[in-house]
Length: 335
Image (cartoon, rainbow, N blue to C red; front, side):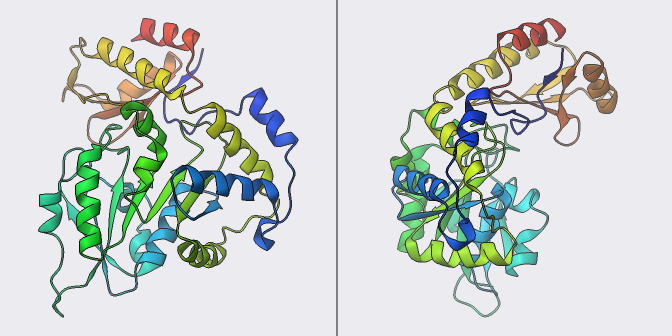
């Protein structure tokens, strides 16, 4: 048996999702007349209380489009040092937008308002103007931890008082919403833009959605075209996203529970030096220095368990809709 825990991006479309894709009514999205894409964009915008949305191929693209629209070089983006937009998007902040990063050393990818205040540049020619604050929820490199709503509200209120836009990288946002029992609208009201990934825990094969005001999305659509993200009969992919949003949200709680079960077993293993808190669907742990990480991962692979390294002596396991009762039974027996 293969139990693939490398990422929640490895999910396969279910038969029901494929059926929805097969019967999608499509048009030409670049020309703006694909009805299924329009339906998806309107649904996401409505759920998060935003005016409009834009369907894109990937979360990296939606993040990079947002950064490009919000900033104008010279400028600076403030984010945590573990943020995906900084660590895992190929240097796109500098390459695409020509702006610099101000990094905050937070708690597993989350910083406080007090930390943020010290990183806002004064109006001085020696410094690039602070043009955007970006949060990631949940934080991938932080082990799937989510931001407390109270801190989000404080940070958002401060950003508005300073006239600084605030963007949310919501690659696994629904994991945070389910874990906190928070609504999309409550989350959405605090952000000028949100990037929502459909191809992780929600189980769609491709796609992310960017939300914001009508004017913001109009500009975003132009950037998407320049980035090469305009798709034609994209409704087949949008149909998968619609199915995911309507059927795969509440079941994320199962992934969270499975992650905790795995963590409870790992906590007793002598080769594990540190097990990070498990808040959603990511299990992150570091091995003792005496353990050879590549050999450890290879040994898991021989048993059909696929995992990835997340840095020095660090292993990541991610639960998802492809991990059912049979997979969990086998996985726990191997561990």
